[in-house]
Image (cartoon, rainbow, N blue to C red; front, side, top):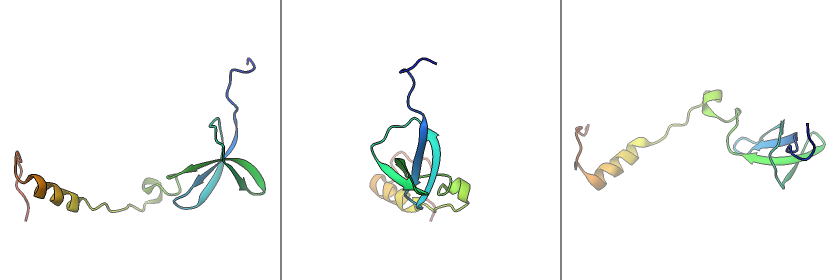
Length: 88
């Protein structure tokens, strides 16, 4: 391999902030933050979702209130152009 053309491939600490889960993996991502894990300091990347917090992997699905949004839409636009009937 030629020198100077490849990114720095190193160990990086990823922190899932939604469930306070940390893991180390190798990456070329650049970051200015530093984090400590098991006594060593690593470049830190904060993420919102990982396998520890994703509903597909955990089996814990969050229920999204779609009924409220649909009702708000129907109140705003009524039956204009609607080909379906409103369930009561």
